[in-house]
Structures are given as C-alpha cells and as structure tokens.
Length: 127
Image 1 (tube, rainbow, N blue to C red):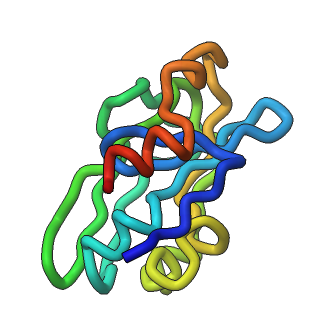
Image 2: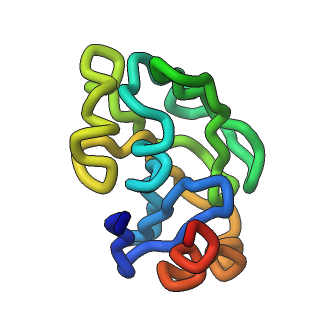
C-alpha cells in the first residue's frame, strides 16, 4: 500500500510531520500514522502559549484501535492549535496534511528542523 508523503515537509520517526512557513512550524501526523490508528475519535492538544520540547510528548490521539502519544518535531512556543479537531477529530483521517493539522509552534531553535527525516527517509522507515 502506498501512503501520501509530501516532500515539502519533514518527519519524526514517531510519524509526526513538520512544515515550516515564515518562522512557524505546523505539525500533524502522517498519512501512514492515521491509517495505522484507524478512525480517530479524540485529540488532546496543549494550550496556546505552552512550551513544547523536541521529541517530547505534546498531546494524545485516540482512535477506535489505540491511544498514542504525540511528539513535537521542534521545541518552542505553541502559537496556534486546530480547535476544529475537538469537534471533528476525523479530519485527521480525512486530510492529515491539510485540515487535520494539530498545532503550530514558534521554534526556539530552527536548527532542530535539520535533525528530522526527509520524505524519502521517512518512506524508507515505513516501507
């Protein structure tokens, strides 16, 4: 089975993606991860203004199959969360790289992005 892995973003081995735009990093989970989880029923996210650390837990995603921790691809301050997910968690399944995004982080150290996997490296990992 083939999964969508846009090459305009970077990935964590734990299946989160990061898309840096104008100094802000938008975060979500990969197509592979949402497929493995099955139907997402709940997402727990930090509040705006909270700090997160690279590769540390920032929230929880719950599906009909499992509960999984979510990990931050970069450290910094949470500047936005996708509140639509509280009422419509299925957006993570329907559009993991678009409407299903989770949060935006203003990174404290943009060089942390250099430690993430490219789309090709991530695809090799999930193959």
